[in-house]
Length: 263
Length: 287
Image 1 (cartoon, each protein chain N blue to C red):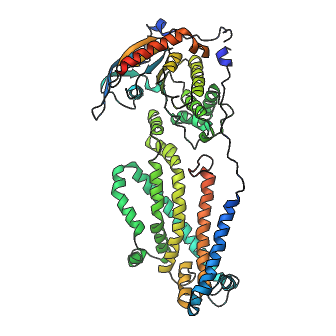
Image 2: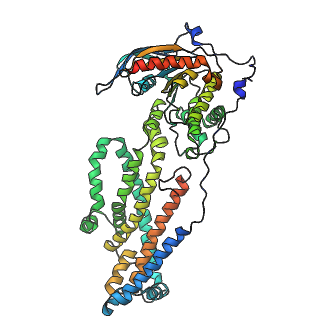
Image 3: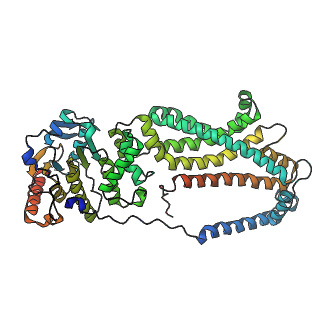
């Protein structure tokens, strides 16, 4: 990475933000489904401005349920979850693009649903398409795009309204390793440019450590937060970070905690 | 500008467009079947049928000579009366199809809004589909005035099921996460219907349209047969006349023209479907 000039907004680490109020707070949140399955048990944590929090945990531990509660797709049965629901961006596991819409029109969708006028939303969409690097692909249909490009379009669609909190539900889980790492870098770049706070769900420990300011480890069902790791590496992070001893060491610790959580 | 801003994202290649090319087998197959069909026809009319019954199935060249190449002799013989009748039937089929589409899609939309309503009405739609028109003719005559309206009613009755079932299936088959995307934005029911469910149902709707279009032609021919009055008559009624008078060539010629009408309507809707959704929709049958 080259020299950084003065007009860059530098996002402080979470440790220096402890006195700032959270954009998203889980306070003793529990979730029991109608069939009696206990998905979440007494989960408490917050996501503050400038933070990128990742939750890792075994399959079916209720990680995604956290996001569904935060976005009001499901109602928690215990505790409280507070968030400004108008400033949430949600990125699904799959790109969920409308196959009958071009990239441009797909990216406009959320703005369109918020009744933003045509000229304005076209402009907003063009900006978001630029941000995710899809310029030149505006008129393509989803079936003409690769999996990675579809995910970029999906990201752009959520970026349009400039959400303050971004919820990511294993967005890159279905992509190949190379594409996934590329999109990790892309997302971090967006995180820095756009300054949103992130809550990211993943299975991948290295993805979690690479992306986040904080990694939370969740236990098997019912999901509880068992460990919390602050990630000390400065942004912007480069690909080489993945091969540094300190990175490997932290991954090891998270992995260890995750194994404990599995039992 | 910072280095983060300068960093150009690396983009994977977009997928190549499938090229349209001339496929020999696309034309070869139908040609082979056509030759086989004509051969079978000659075999039937000149070998298999006993001589005294050969008038039932005139040979292909006789049909062309008498059914297509004679313009008009007398009141009903020749190609011109057949064309007039086919045109009359085509109008009934198309108007009936338009009514079917509007009513059918409306029913499907209503049914898609409530599982209860869907369950309550579904069996009756299936029943309508298989109701024998023959048995209903007296009732239709009693309830509906005018042959034109009676014919249209028959068209709707026969053609409506595929459009309802396919539209309904399409409307309820939108992705769960796509629905959630709309839920997250607080979309209204109408927005969800118009911007998510309806467009995602379009491939199914067009499948239904094509089937219904074919059935509309059948319905119109059946309607001609049962509901007619003086003046211009539909091809269904014309066929009945030829059948009674044992005019084999005209009979076969009108059957062919009725099939051609069905084929034209079917192809037209196929074309319409490709124009409307071909850009984004690919069928699962490969190229």
